[in-house]
Amino acid sequence: MTDLLDELWSLPVAVTASHRGRDNGLIALTAVPATILPEAPRLTVDLSHGSLTHELALAAGSFVLHLLRSPPDERTLALVRALGLRTGREGDKLAAFESERGVTGAPILRDTLGYFEVRVAATLDLGDMTVVAGDVVASGRLAEGRALRFDELDAHMPPGWLETRRADELAEARRRRGLPQRT
Ligand SMILES: Cc1cc2nc3c(=O)[nH]c(=O)nc-3n(C[C@H](O)[C@H](O)[C@H](O)COP(=O)(O)O)c2cc1C
Image 1 (tube, rainbow, N blue to C red):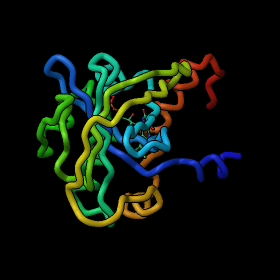
Image 2 (image 1 turned 180 degrees about the vertical axis):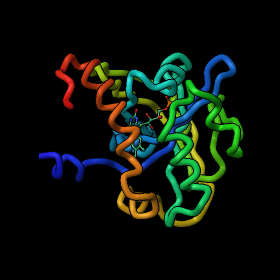
Image 3 (image 1 turned 30 degrees about the vertical axis):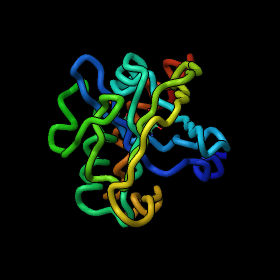
Protein backbone atom coordinates (compact mmCIF):
# COMPACT_ATOMS: atom_id res chain seq x y z
CA MET A 1 0.00 0.00 0.00
CA THR A 2 2.84 2.42 0.84
CA ASP A 3 4.25 2.16 -2.69
CA LEU A 4 0.88 3.05 -4.18
CA LEU A 5 0.33 5.94 -1.76
CA ASP A 6 3.79 7.29 -2.62
CA GLU A 7 2.60 7.61 -6.24
CA LEU A 8 0.07 10.18 -5.01
CA TRP A 9 2.59 12.69 -3.61
CA SER A 10 2.41 15.96 -5.53
CA LEU A 11 5.22 18.19 -6.80
CA PRO A 12 7.61 19.47 -4.11
CA VAL A 13 6.67 23.05 -3.20
CA ALA A 14 8.03 25.66 -0.80
CA VAL A 15 5.39 27.24 1.44
CA THR A 16 6.20 30.50 3.24
CA ALA A 17 4.19 32.46 5.77
CA SER A 18 4.65 35.54 7.90
CA HIS A 19 2.91 36.72 11.07
CA ARG A 20 3.79 39.60 13.37
CA GLY A 21 7.24 40.03 11.85
CA ARG A 22 8.17 36.32 11.94
CA ASP A 23 8.88 34.73 8.51
CA ASN A 24 9.22 31.01 7.91
CA GLY A 25 8.73 28.28 5.34
CA LEU A 26 8.71 24.56 4.70
CA ILE A 27 8.78 22.02 1.88
CA ALA A 28 5.55 20.14 1.14
CA LEU A 29 4.46 17.31 -1.16
CA THR A 30 0.75 17.80 -0.65
CA ALA A 31 -0.23 20.80 -2.79
CA VAL A 32 -3.05 20.32 -5.29
CA PRO A 33 -5.39 22.52 -7.33
CA ALA A 34 -8.85 22.71 -5.73
CA THR A 35 -11.16 24.12 -8.39
CA ILE A 36 -11.90 23.78 -12.10
CA LEU A 37 -12.61 27.51 -12.41
CA PRO A 38 -9.65 29.34 -14.01
CA GLU A 39 -11.07 32.75 -13.04
CA ALA A 40 -11.23 31.88 -9.33
CA PRO A 41 -8.16 29.71 -8.65
CA ARG A 42 -7.95 27.71 -5.42
CA LEU A 43 -5.52 25.20 -4.02
CA THR A 44 -4.99 23.06 -0.95
CA VAL A 45 -1.88 22.08 0.95
CA ASP A 46 -1.60 19.87 4.05
CA LEU A 47 0.48 21.39 6.84
CA SER A 48 1.71 19.41 9.89
CA HIS A 49 0.36 20.66 13.19
CA GLY A 50 3.80 20.82 14.78
CA SER A 51 5.38 22.99 12.10
CA LEU A 52 6.06 26.68 12.61
CA THR A 53 4.77 27.35 9.09
CA HIS A 54 1.39 25.84 10.06
CA GLU A 55 1.24 28.20 13.03
CA LEU A 56 2.16 31.30 11.00
CA ALA A 57 -0.02 30.54 7.96
CA LEU A 58 -3.13 29.95 10.06
CA ALA A 59 -2.48 32.96 12.29
CA ALA A 60 -1.91 35.22 9.27
CA GLY A 61 -4.67 33.64 7.17
CA SER A 62 -2.34 33.59 4.19
CA PHE A 63 0.75 31.96 2.70
CA VAL A 64 2.82 31.80 -0.49
CA LEU A 65 3.23 28.49 -2.32
CA HIS A 66 6.20 28.19 -4.72
CA LEU A 67 6.98 25.67 -7.44
CA LEU A 68 10.66 24.75 -7.65
CA ARG A 69 12.92 24.82 -10.74
CA SER A 70 13.77 21.77 -12.82
CA PRO A 71 16.47 20.53 -13.12
CA PRO A 72 17.35 21.39 -9.52
CA ASP A 73 20.36 23.76 -9.27
CA GLU A 74 22.41 24.40 -6.12
CA ARG A 75 20.04 27.17 -4.92
CA THR A 76 17.03 24.87 -5.28
CA LEU A 77 18.75 22.08 -3.33
CA ALA A 78 19.80 24.61 -0.67
CA LEU A 79 16.16 25.71 -0.34
CA VAL A 80 14.98 22.12 0.10
CA ARG A 81 17.65 21.41 2.73
CA ALA A 82 17.00 24.64 4.64
CA LEU A 83 13.21 24.59 4.57
CA GLY A 84 12.45 20.86 4.55
CA LEU A 85 14.98 19.31 6.91
CA ARG A 86 14.82 21.50 9.99
CA THR A 87 12.29 23.61 11.79
CA GLY A 88 12.33 27.39 11.90
CA ARG A 89 11.78 27.09 15.66
CA GLU A 90 15.56 26.49 15.82
CA GLY A 91 16.47 29.68 13.92
CA ASP A 92 15.77 31.83 10.87
CA LYS A 93 15.58 29.56 7.79
CA LEU A 94 14.88 32.25 5.21
CA ALA A 95 17.65 34.80 5.90
CA ALA A 96 19.99 33.20 3.34
CA PHE A 97 17.45 33.47 0.50
CA GLU A 98 16.44 36.51 -1.56
CA SER A 99 12.79 37.39 -1.20
CA GLU A 100 10.27 40.17 -1.63
CA ARG A 101 6.80 40.83 -0.21
CA GLY A 102 3.65 40.63 -2.24
CA VAL A 103 0.04 41.34 -1.34
CA THR A 104 -0.21 38.84 1.53
CA GLY A 105 2.98 40.02 3.25
CA ALA A 106 4.51 36.51 3.20
CA PRO A 107 7.97 36.22 1.60
CA ILE A 108 8.13 35.41 -2.13
CA LEU A 109 11.32 33.41 -2.72
CA ARG A 110 13.27 34.50 -5.81
CA ASP A 111 15.09 31.17 -6.34
CA THR A 112 11.93 29.40 -7.52
CA LEU A 113 10.01 28.74 -10.74
CA GLY A 114 7.06 30.84 -9.63
CA TYR A 115 4.59 31.40 -6.84
CA PHE A 116 0.95 31.66 -5.75
CA GLU A 117 -0.07 34.09 -3.04
CA VAL A 118 -2.95 32.52 -1.16
CA ARG A 119 -5.56 33.67 1.35
CA VAL A 120 -6.91 30.88 3.54
CA ALA A 121 -10.56 30.11 2.74
CA ALA A 122 -11.16 26.96 4.83
CA THR A 123 -9.29 24.43 6.95
CA LEU A 124 -9.90 20.79 7.85
CA ASP A 125 -8.18 19.52 10.98
CA LEU A 126 -7.06 15.90 10.60
CA GLY A 127 -5.29 15.60 13.96
CA ASP A 128 -1.71 15.40 12.71
CA MET A 129 -2.16 17.74 9.73
CA THR A 130 -4.47 20.53 8.64
CA VAL A 131 -5.76 20.60 5.08
CA VAL A 132 -5.53 24.30 4.23
CA ALA A 133 -7.63 25.51 1.30
CA GLY A 134 -7.12 28.97 -0.11
CA ASP A 135 -7.91 31.45 -2.84
CA VAL A 136 -5.02 32.44 -5.09
CA VAL A 137 -4.97 36.25 -4.96
CA ALA A 138 -1.77 36.81 -6.97
CA SER A 139 0.81 34.75 -8.81
CA GLY A 140 3.94 35.16 -10.86
CA ARG A 141 6.50 33.23 -12.90
CA LEU A 142 10.12 33.86 -11.89
CA ALA A 143 11.94 31.52 -14.31
CA GLU A 144 11.40 29.68 -17.58
CA GLY A 145 10.97 25.92 -17.68
CA ARG A 146 9.12 23.18 -15.85
CA ALA A 147 8.43 22.45 -12.20
CA LEU A 148 10.67 20.07 -10.25
CA ARG A 149 9.26 16.58 -9.58
CA PHE A 150 10.01 14.63 -6.42
CA ASP A 151 11.86 11.80 -8.21
CA GLU A 152 14.21 14.37 -9.82
CA LEU A 153 14.82 16.04 -6.48
CA ASP A 154 15.44 12.70 -4.76
CA ALA A 155 18.03 11.77 -7.42
CA HIS A 156 20.03 14.93 -6.59
CA MET A 157 20.02 14.49 -2.80
CA PRO A 158 22.31 12.19 -0.77
CA PRO A 159 20.97 8.65 -0.13
CA GLY A 160 18.80 8.51 3.01
CA TRP A 161 18.38 12.31 3.12
CA LEU A 162 14.75 12.14 4.23
CA GLU A 163 15.00 9.37 6.83
CA THR A 164 16.72 11.16 9.72
CA ARG A 165 14.23 13.98 9.91
CA ARG A 166 11.29 11.80 9.00
CA ALA A 167 11.69 9.54 12.04
CA ASP A 168 10.92 12.48 14.36
CA GLU A 169 8.04 13.66 12.18
CA LEU A 170 6.47 10.20 12.02
CA ALA A 171 6.70 9.85 15.81
CA GLU A 172 5.05 13.25 16.25
CA ALA A 173 2.28 12.43 13.75
CA ARG A 174 1.57 9.08 15.49
CA ARG A 175 1.35 10.85 18.84
CA ARG A 176 -1.09 13.43 17.47
CA ARG A 177 -3.23 10.72 15.84
CA GLY A 178 -3.21 8.62 19.04
CA LEU A 179 -1.48 5.72 17.25
CA PRO A 180 1.11 3.47 18.94
CA GLN A 181 4.77 4.34 18.31
CA ARG A 182 6.84 1.88 16.27
CA THR A 183 10.41 0.93 17.15
C1 LIG B 1 10.10 16.10 0.50
C2 LIG B 1 9.40 16.65 1.72
C3 LIG B 1 8.01 16.72 1.75
C4 LIG B 1 7.35 17.25 2.85
N1 LIG B 1 5.97 17.38 2.82
C5 LIG B 1 5.35 18.05 3.82
C6 LIG B 1 3.97 18.38 3.73
O1 LIG B 1 3.28 18.09 2.76
N2 LIG B 1 3.40 19.05 4.78
C7 LIG B 1 4.13 19.42 5.88
O2 LIG B 1 3.58 20.05 6.79
N3 LIG B 1 5.45 19.11 5.99
C8 LIG B 1 6.07 18.46 4.98
N4 LIG B 1 7.41 18.20 5.06
C9 LIG B 1 8.12 18.48 6.31
C10 LIG B 1 8.45 19.96 6.51
O3 LIG B 1 9.03 20.55 5.37
C11 LIG B 1 9.42 20.02 7.70
O4 LIG B 1 8.80 19.43 8.83
C12 LIG B 1 9.86 21.38 8.06
O5 LIG B 1 11.05 21.23 8.83
C13 LIG B 1 8.86 22.15 8.90
O6 LIG B 1 9.44 23.39 9.17
P1 LIG B 1 8.83 24.52 10.11
O7 LIG B 1 8.59 23.94 11.49
O8 LIG B 1 9.92 25.53 10.10
O9 LIG B 1 7.57 25.00 9.49
C14 LIG B 1 8.10 17.69 3.96
C15 LIG B 1 9.50 17.63 3.93
C16 LIG B 1 10.15 17.13 2.81
C17 LIG B 1 11.65 17.13 2.80
